[in-house]
Structure formats: structure tokens, C-alpha cells
Length: 378
Image (cartoon, rainbow, N blue to C red; front, top):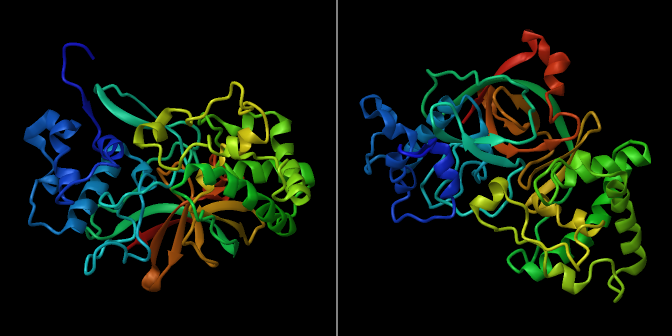
């Protein structure tokens, strides 16, 4: 964009600066406004984003989140940041609605989706989801009269979590040389547990387990559905090899290879569109099962779950049995919601659900407007 100023959508800047710190948490939003597309038309500056450092932090973040949703006509902002554990995370006496992104907290958990950074017709930079289209081409339908602390959007209910497996939390998550080793040791147990609960034919189950545990992404953030059949077979091979070898010297994942696995905290830009930090030449990273293990970063700090319909999914570590899986219009991925009193919902987080990542819910019963419902998240 030679010869003219370049601006980015606000949600792009919030994403790219996610690892930055601010003395005042409100500065995480206010400091970016002059660099965002908001500054292109100062005469129409959104009133809800007027810098006011006396305003409660949760109000500033809620207003910014709703602005990003309106500006993009999508819910991708809900998928980019850590959310609250039942609204009580963070400093004492600081209450955040469950759906409001916590831009003031560091988060190394990888997003379910891969994004690319590109230009849109108004010459501003925008984030585009590369693969998932859970709500197809629908736009956000949001109640603009809802209170600031409430996000009320339209969507469809898909399924309910029936079984939740233990969350995958590495004891050495901050030590890269142990990261891949722990994942490779945990996969066989998860595989065997899911194999008992998910009633698929073996080949179909291997593929499903592969896609769910990687959130459908390769180490280069490509489409894992395009990987060769040997990729899916490697999951079962890894399981059986581990059962035989355990921690023997000849174990499938050597210490040298595990030390080269990408760290969970590779920085915001890499999480957008760059491949993981690994070298294939001379280390076997272009072969399976190492390529599969290098794709498991999105499994960290999450848990596998099985729905009432028998589908396998990957969701937030704090999801529970009885949580609802919903497709919200304008969302690229399904979301986990927890029912509350008075027909309200707690937003738990994004998820990957086998068979529902490309608009299947809206191809079937979701076509009927009678199945659409309002989800009021608090």
C-alpha cells in the first residue's frame, strides 16, 4: 500500500500484540486505537471506544470485543484469547463476563484455527480463517440492545458433552525438551480410551482421532484432511509401539527429536500463518509419527470429549459433562457453552468437533429457522 497510511482492524492489532504488556490493562485497547482503522475516520469514532482510563477494565474490554464483532461480522475475536474460569479469573474483585477476551492475561494455548493476515477492499489489514467454516457463510446476528456485559447472538444447538477425558496439561509445559515426549506418552492412553467410547470402524476411528487431536491442522498450519493414509495409520502405530517399548532406549520419540519440538509459546505472528519451528532435514520431521507429534500443540491445555451422539471432539480444559456444543452464526468453529439459570449461558471456549467443522450443522437440521435460538452469554 505504497504512498498511503496502512491501518489494521482492531482485532488484528489486539492479536498481534497479545504477548505485550501494559502498565494499565486498559492500555491494551486504547493504545492501539490510533493505529487501527478506527483512526481513518475520526469524525465517526465509536463512542464506546472513547479512551477513558477511569472506566472499569471489564467494560472497556467488553466494548472492544463487541466493536470487533460488529466490524468484522464474525466471532473470530472470541477464539483468539484466553477466557475466564466461570468469570472469576484475574485480580480479586475484578469480574469479567465469560465471553469477554482477557487481553490482560498471557496465554500460550494455541488457537483451534489458523489465520492469515491480508488486505480487504478498504485497504485495512484483516485476519482470515484459513480452513474452518462451521457456520458456513452466515454473518453474526447480534442483539445490539443487550446490556454491555451480555453477548446475545443467534445460533443452533448441536450436541451435548457426555464424557470428558482428563485435560492434557504437561508438567513441563515450559520446557520444550520435555514437551513432545510428554505428548507422545499421553497419546496411547487417550487413543485406547476413545477407542472404547467412539464406535467407528478402525480406519475411520484412526482418521478421526488424528484430526481431532491436531484440530485438523498440520505442523505448517495446512489442512490435515489432505494428509496421506499413512498419517492416520501412524496414530495406531504410535500407540502399539509405545505399549511395547514404554521408556526403552529405542522408544519411538528420542530425546534429541523431542527437544526440537515447537514450544507452545511461539509468539503471536507464528500462530497466525507461519509453520511450526522445526527442521525436517536430517531429523525425520517429514515422516510419521514425528510429523503427527509435531502437530499436537493444540491438544495442550485442552481435553478430548465424546458427545451424546458419539462424536469425538477437542475442547477447553475446563469444560464439563453436560456442556452444550453450539454453532453460533458468524463463528468459524463450534463453541462450548454451559447452561445457567434464566436461559443464560456461560461461554467456555472454542472446540473442534468431528463432522461439524464445515457447516454440516447448517446443511441439515440447522437449515430450519425453527431450530435457531438466541444464546445469551453472561
